Image 1: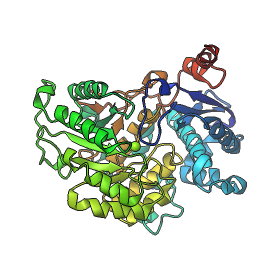
Image 2: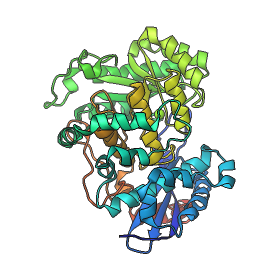
Image 3: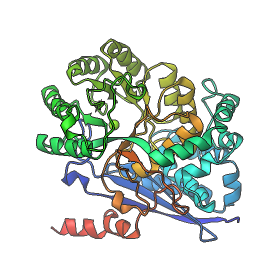
Image 4: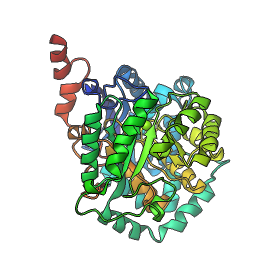
Length: 466
Ligand SMILES: [Mg+2]
């Protein structure tokens, strides 16, 4: 049934995570995990929810940009928008005056992420399917039409993308059945925030091992001796079979899904994340000095725009068996294109709302598959875990066809604010979202919005009074 988009509302929602040190790393020392949230309304009951993530101040600026972009949808027919989401994405991105304040980067681009995701959420709800299922049920031609291709055809043409999707189409039902049964592999970041004490890191690591996880990430880059000490604490727990849950099946560090990941004796993998603190030569020296804790990769070693810098770091660390990962701050598909062309990354870490929504994510999933680089989405933030499970399912079922070497970030914060929170099974893997009404799983409880809306939500009013 056709509907017309009649209006929208935005909410600046901020959670006081700075009080507990959640989300702290070498660059981001006092984060209030925040959501620049948008709801699109139509002439029927159909709605669409979307958001982008920030870490506090400035979230109001993103909301202002969302309003400018969402205005462009008012009066549009939803079925016409849904019929070619790639063209819709181009339209949303093509206001010449708004383009000037990007283009395709910064506030205006993450705002587009919120709006495009809200439209995809609406599309999925209109078909009564979770977002991932809407897309995996599309034909290869429909997926290509939904993808943002501008500026990437030197790396991947529409016809190459179509051929890749067609090659995977015959076996997609098997993969869907498999992932529904076993879940999608995940890793834990929330044990290793920089603001946590050694005791808290050790306790959270033991809990994560007991919960079935076998990939763990630690924040580094503020102090080398401190990093080495914390890394050894984590290694001493994840490498020790006594902490494994009774149900754990033995993992061999030379099994195909662990090859090249510096897995320890129990098959546990450690990753480290510097959140952009270093210059290139400093990154190389610092990471070499952490070789003893055997990381699989260093994430965000330097400035996110520095494609050649990442390539130099990767080349220098290769003899030490340590890879490079990045992407949570990569502005757009063009940066990912160049990271792949320059052989700068071992792991591609898309962000669901720094990239401007599902259509641009699809272009990066397709390019990464063509270049043979696994996609392990970023999810350290509010709402991001809810979003990214959909993207990894799309990647596995219809794009790359593989998941056992991939791991999807999981942080155990703030899921209670969502109507359809993500969940993890007893083997430390994401469950498959399966509610016909959940869309892109990003709808927030009204009560949470009322409580945490900045600056007049009940939480912030009472915090100010104290
Ligand atoms: Mg990171």
